Length: 192
Image (cartoon, rainbow, N blue to C red; front, side, top):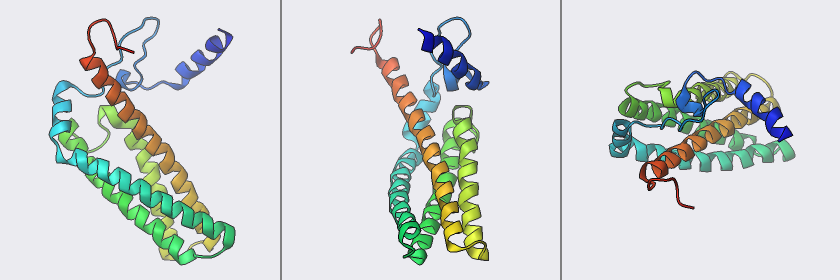
């Protein structure tokens, strides 16, 4: 009870998004959270070929990330494989650009705008930090700025931001699945 009295106000203070569909909270009364998609948006999402493209690219990007992360860490620990690590981060960055462009197309098709759709505002905003860090890394490599270790540490910073952003999208996917369960749940709530 004490932790609830201490933690809940902190969470509520930090969770100050102006959009109810992001949080599902309201002051003083319990409401069902707003669904992530309207029925029309859900239909457009389900019919869009870009939905599948995003799923495939997300998995591919994560696989490239894991390989690249291993190569970057190998270089930082052993000092070997700088060229391979650099190439892997550049490939990861290219995949990131592709997923950002196709994601914007998907968002336009589903929500009617290329970026910052109501349901994905915070994820899109943080994606710009991720893409910015990756771009700064590529710029440092192309312009020869910093030594090899500094460049690899910059890549790690970009990767840390990517992991946070990927987590945001996974939470959003989970919220969408919960919406689907609520939508098809029998009256009286979800079965356990």
